Length: 215
Image 1 (tube, rainbow, N blue to C red):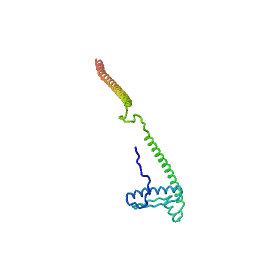
Image 2 (cartoon, rainbow, N blue to C red; image 1 turned 180 degrees about the vertical axis):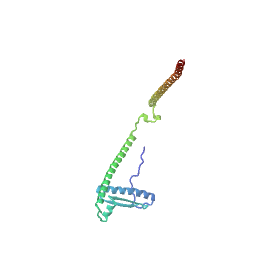
Image 3 (tube, helix red, strand yellow; image 1 turned 30 degrees about the vertical axis):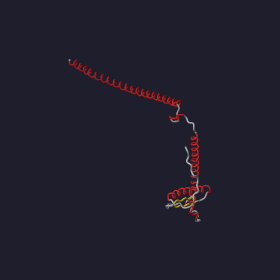
Image 4 (spheres, rainbow, N blue to C red; image 1 turned 45 degrees about the horizontal axis):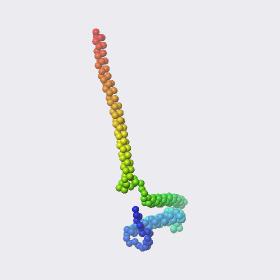
């Protein structure tokens, strides 16, 4: 697979971009790059930063570290208002530093996985010799086709045997359940027959006893 060749990094003329779509796309890309550099500068040099940007459509974007109030007060030479603001600023600094460390670790992991995927793709592209099972049937020779045919026939044979085995298991389980239910019906009929036969015999014996007593 041929890779698409690029023209590489080119120098862009620093002048107003007349096309609106290109200007908005450039602003979005450059804004993210600027904020990323500001965040890195805070971490590397432990500095306070304040950035306010208005997009070509007038939408504001800002970035302050550690907080907007602390940066503005420091710009106007205004000291911290109370101790609670100092505590909050320290908390924000520590939190931002931890998040930056986590982001750096994730970025390194992503970069490592990208390089690993590129190496695997290069190895796969260089691998010319493949197993015959990976090659289309039209490209196999007579011996390879015979091997593949034998494997498929063996698989079909085993699949049929397994189907027959499952059918036999189902038949045996259904026959056992039907035989148990029929035996229950036989026992019930026998008990009913005994019961109905017993009642008239008992009545006849009672009649005979009454006749003897009258005599």
